[in-house]
Length: 192
Image 1: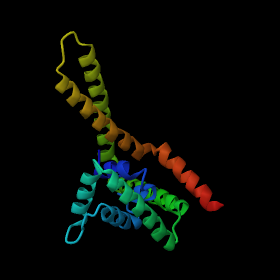
Image 2: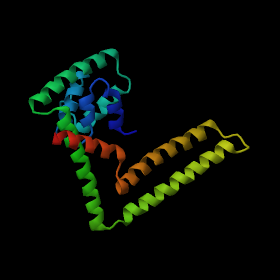
Image 3: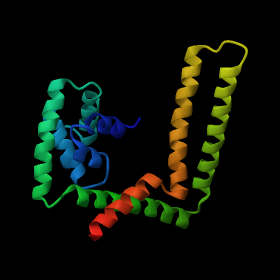
Image 4: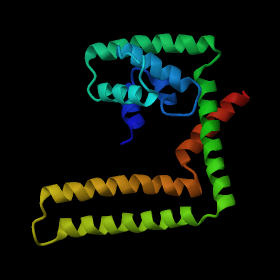
């Protein structure tokens, strides 16, 4: 799981607006991280952005009740600060959808300029790995000999990681229904 998925999972219920922008290229992402770090009383002075992010992610793995209360307070302050900048949740959703779409278009444009073979090779390799690991798991679970739990756990974890990357790779070619529906809803709301 990426550092941002961990952080978002930890703050999504108590700091939902900030959770949307954390780890994105949105201009409010840095501001959201500063509010979150401040709530956790993590001093970012003299630290690189990456070091601050790692420290916040480590704290979010097991937040205390006091941490969650401080994050909730920071959420209110963050929402007030972004409202003063002219942001509401609808505008944020639209901008995030536009960033996601632009990112995908840039990747596809690069593939058009440099050739599609690297992406195609990656897609084929990941597809073979997914089906190979799925077959291995089925064989291990139905085999007549006993499989060590550690080996089964390792293969299962590897299968989950490869499957996740495979889905992302296929999204490059086909897009995602989640992002598409979010984008459609955000664009419809913007048109009103």
